[in-house]
Image (cartoon, rainbow, N blue to C red; front, side, top):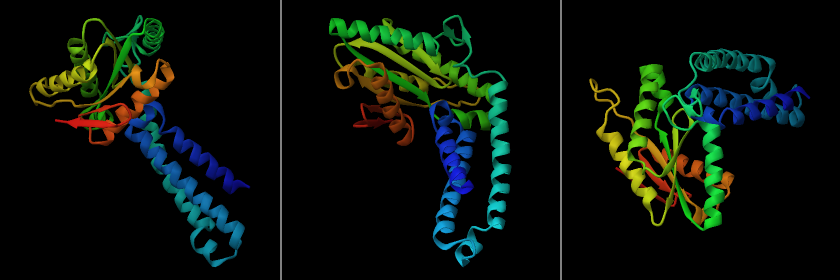
Length: 268
């Protein structure tokens, strides 16, 4: 009974480590990978035990207590290091998207909860008045890798720099939120395809304005664009579509703009 329970727990833990903000963190992805490998091993061990028995050559050679012990030792070593780093990142100054000053994040844009409330209000009023809304998500590329390679201070500088670029290049009459450390969302009332143009302007500005003037290091971002004509006025549906489009842009190598459900992508 123990084998299938470990397999189920490992699989669920692996999936959990790939959800939300964790999926952007390199150490969380390492934990997820090790959990999934553990789950696969114990799932296979369960099947072999049930089909061939504990005395079969296949079980003794590949799924015996010695093999399981070796795997668990590797699992403990890898996860101890990765989880320790995750915990240190959590306790050593919250990410800029999590630190707030009133209703704003520390970089001066609406933090997650107030932004979600305002976004939902905009959607309700837009639906009532028949207005068309477009949303642009801006996700900083490789932010966890920046923190690892260049330090947390550099990653915070990148977030602050991108936040200012988003503020300056988004139209004045727009709603701008900072729902996550490296994510910004722009909501605007439009008549055409203004969101695509705004995303392009922000992308060009990221190339023109380095984070570190002395080293000339620049940030890039992945952009997702969705609108109410395609996805309606439901906040959960729009948020999921925006996540999907942004993930497609990141999967294409970053510095891309993806519209809708990855139907169209452009790159510099």
